[in-house]
Each structure stands twice: as structure tokens, then as C-alpha cells.
Amino acid sequence: MILNDQPTVKYGLIYTLIFGGFTFLFFLFCYAASYYTGGFPLSALDSVARAAYSGRISHIQFNPDCARHDPELGYLLRPGSCRFTRSEFDVSVQVNSFGLRDDEESLDAPEIIMLGDSHTMGLGVAAEASFSSLVEQDLQTKTLNAGISSYGTAREMMLFDRLDTTNAKYVVLQYCDNDYEENAAYFRGDGALDVMDQEEYLQWTAINERRQESFLNPGLMVFGRVTDKLAKFLTAGQNGKAAVKEADAFQFILEKKKDSLENKTVIVFELNGHNKNDNRFVDNVSDRFEDSGLNIVFLRVGDILTDEDYFNLDSHMRPSGHRKMADAIVETIRLLENEDAGDEAVSVAGKKVRN
Image (cartoon, rainbow, N blue to C red; front, side, top):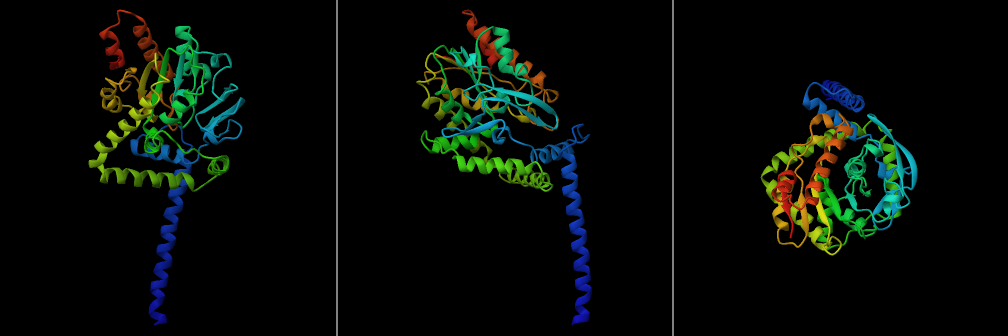
């Protein structure tokens, strides 16, 4: 029996070495791909590189030089300045006393307030190149950039309640497809949201630091993305239900904050990473507000941006993308300011809901 078992042990060892070798090569490729900023010729390889990159990057909200814990919102930026660097950019981040990426003066009764996540905050570009700053320059109107990385609509509106809104005429609200989990939790909690305490926040800052040095994490992220895509493919028939829930949660949040938004015009649009932009969310949610009593304009951005307006690996917009978004917002506001805008505003914004 011992002699008969020897070939089995031998081949088992060979198979283990082969599997281990391929596994090592897979993780090595993913790690190397996470640094390749030139763009692969095949879209599948490009997707692998982006997934691998997302597995090793630092997140600004968990960088102790740039952010701090907040008991009500989980985190805000840290007042002062820091440098935030990824493979495709290196930017200075100036933060006011509240914890937002804007100057101190903008906190005092701004007329336009920009709410959103890292896309609104301008991650990856200089502050003056963000669409918030460009809108302020073009309209010569005090504008506050209140975008915070990774916030969903729920925390954006919770943040809004803490700002000086006495002169706010326009609220520009950027939605992102990854807002759903937070928004759904707020919906299930009937307007209450559990946010991380300081201990949990410190744990995430430690994880954030380790992941930048991990050899395995890029490969694990690629594997996770593949399994996620497979799961979505197998549950494709449930997409319609998910879209309804997404709209339900968004509608609930805005109607919950109706008093805060009274006498203000809300400009809503969806902005996602890597130009994964379409108009489905806006089309799905806009009809829900026709009898809400809120003044809402839905901006359809599906045809505004191109792939070249985004970094290759990083999911955020280059300055060209911010310029295009600023132009669309400015044009919409100017049309709304024009008493004779009428249906012309609808053609720019996609759908206007004003009651």
C-alpha cells in the first residue's frame, strides 16, 4: 500500500506546485496591473487593472492626515491641509473649520450648496478645478462645496442640516450608484442611521494603511469583482426590483428633509465612476416628486461625459469632466433664473419638477 500511494503523493505535490505557481502569478499580475496607468488594449484587462487598483489605494476619509471622526456623520475632513496621492494624481487638500474642502468664507450663508460624495468633493483634481469651484467662478455666486467622500444621500442631507442655509437658493445634489446601501439603511431606520463610532473609525484607518502595502489585496479584489459580476448575471431578473428600492430610499430621504429644502431649488443628477453614467436613475425617480411640494430639477448627464473625462485606473473625473459638469449646472441655473425659461429648462435638465 505504501508503494501504491507514492504516485498519488507525487502527483498531488506536482498539482499543488502548479496550482500554487498559477496562484502566485495571478496575484503578481494583479499587483503589477494596479500600478499600470497606460490602459490595456482590451477592456477586460482594463477592468482587471481597475479592480486591482481599487484593492490597494488609500481612502481619504480614513487617512488620519486628511480626515477625522465625527460622531454624527462618521467622519469629516480634518481642518487645515494635507496632501493626497494616488497613482494618477497628487493634490493638495485645503479644508475649512467645518471639515469641508472649501474656504472659510464659503461657510457663511452660501447661495449654492453642493452636496455629494468624492466626485463632488473633487477627488483627484485641484480645488479650483472642481465643478463646485468652476460654478462659483462662472456665476460669481458664493458656493459651498459640501461633498464628502463616500457619503450617501442620507448623510449628505444630515450634513446639510448642520450648514448655514439662510441664503441658500440652490442645492445641487449629486447621487451615485453606491449610495444605495446607506440610503436603504436610513429608509429602514425610518430616518435614523447608525454611523461608526470612534473605535470603528480607528479600525478602518488601520485597515486603510495596511491595504496600501498588501501584495494579496489587489488579487483578492479582482476575484471579488468577478464573483460579484457572476452573481449579478445570475440574478439579472431582479434588477427591476432593486431599481424601485433605490428610488424609494431616495424619495424617502428628500421628503423627510422637505422642511429643510423649502423655498430652495434642488438640482439632482447621478454621477458614477469610470463614466458608468446613464439616465435610468433619474428617469425612474423623477416622476415620484411631481406632487411632492419640492422644487426639483433632474439633470440628465448620461450624454455629457466621455471615457476620456475620467482617469484610467482611478474612478474619478479629470479636470475636463469637472469642466463639463460645471457647464451643465451653470446653464441649468441660468435658465432657471430666466423668467422666460419655460420648457427650455426641461431640455437642459432632462426633467423639471417644480410645484
